[in-house]
Amino acid sequence: MYLVENPVLQRELLVNLRMPRAFVLLFVYQALLAVVVYFAWPQEARLDLTNKPEEAKRLVNMFFLGQYILASLMAPSFAAGAITGEKERKTYEMILASPLRPGAIVLGKLIASLTHLAVLIFASLPIVMLCLPLGGVSLYEVLAAYLGLIISVVAFGMISVACSSFFQRTASALVVSYLLILPLALLAVLLWTWLESFGGFRLLLTVTVLPAVGAAICIALFVNTSVRLLHPPDVGSEGKEVVDLEQEAQQAVGLVIQRDQFPDRLFAPAKRTDLLEDGANPVYDKEVRSEIFSQGTLMLRLVIQVSMLLAIPLMAFCLYIMPQFAAWYIGYVIVFNMLVGPVFSAGSVTSERERQTLDLLLTTIITPWQILWGKLIAGLRVSSVLTMFLLWPVLLACVMVSSYWTNLGSVAAYLAIVLMTCLTTAMIALFCSVVFHKTSHSLMVTYLIIIALFCLPLAASYFADTFFPNDPATEVIQIVGITSPFSAAFHVPLDMDVGVRVEQPANTIYGWVMFASYLVINSSLNAVLLASMIWLFNVRWRVAG
Image 1 (cartoon, rainbow, N blue to C red):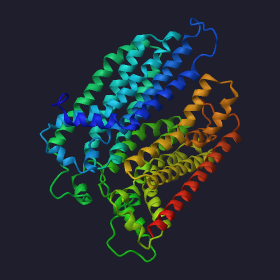
Image 2: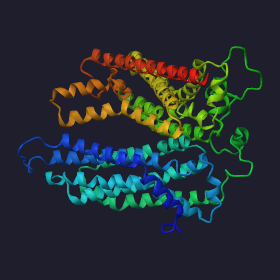
Image 3: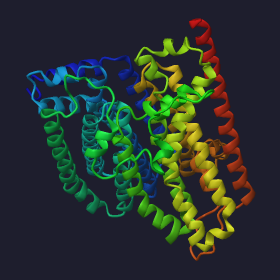
Image 4: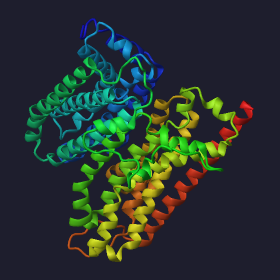
């Protein structure tokens, strides 16, 4: 019932592994890893393996860490919709009413979600084995690394499935999964890098401590999720689609959203009790007051609490103890917006399609421009306010730390970078929502575009600096990094009168040019996306008319 005769597992495997995108993803994944190894392979005609084991070791470590980060990012995308997908397809209660045990359902969903990812991981083994003859890394270290990778992926998948059982929408489960998984993945990467010089000790931890920690996480979440499916609190004959926020607030543990109080009303205004004013945009009013929070505030409360909990140590170290590392805290704020921002905009138009209300909306007297800016500002308002919660420590540091008094221009640049990032992520998410028909597809493509725009240039720059530091093309690759807010934040000149300094751009003017270029390029991108959406809506408007 759990493995051999599990219909949930059999059905999910047949559907997932036979889809064309499964083969496309496998090809792209393998091609990407192969390209990395090809370009990083030593270029000498003859290799002296006794003098260059460190280069080979660096190649294998970069290959493994890159694959670890990719797998960590992909695990929630495969598993976060395991149970919410049933809820969205209206088959959740049917599967609970079947003779299947809750544990069999959870186990089937978990294995089916991670099987494709496991195929990708094992298919990369031949590529990494090519690096072993270069020396510097033993077969046992490679096998231990893959053991740690598999254990981490299973634990991350179990976290995503557990999150999927708590929410009604895949988007909510996905963003909470990322908020929980990314800190764990980054901690694992830091520990692996820090223990690089202690190969034996790192190997021992990988085969002893890591399996125990992973098993504890998986068992605890598996039992909790199975019990939740055995006594589900989110089913009933009434079939409610909208959560009663007042009742949810009474039952909430921890943070409670008070929509009539400051600052909660900034991102969650109370429901309207009077008539709409003349000339007001009904789409915006509906979105910001009802639509965004129709499924409750659980995701919102978890996002606020987890983000603030992670921000406290980073804020203390990067802003107050070592203020020269302020750009790293800005990077954390940017990552938060990258994860949270698309959630509130990626379903703006696709949700209308899924409810089959888009044609009705287009036949009203509301213009396409009003529909677009109402949905854009509603999602942007929520994501921006949540992101600003993480920026108030920066303003507080300007008052408490004297080193910032001569760097107010740099602080203003940090704020501008974050605000531009908020606008860009919301605009990309809304554009994908206009183009695609399903919210899940819109959200995943949004994340892919944001990662390609913000993170891929940094990865390419790091790769070029590591393996081709003297190549003329390296400078060109570094210039491409101006599309990334991370690059712009780290290029902002910050002159701190402290004893320890981090490496700053040699030319201050170059840093400001990179900052200005980021604002100009992203402003142009947002203008193009907005014009494209207006054109698409106008075409749709004429067809509907």
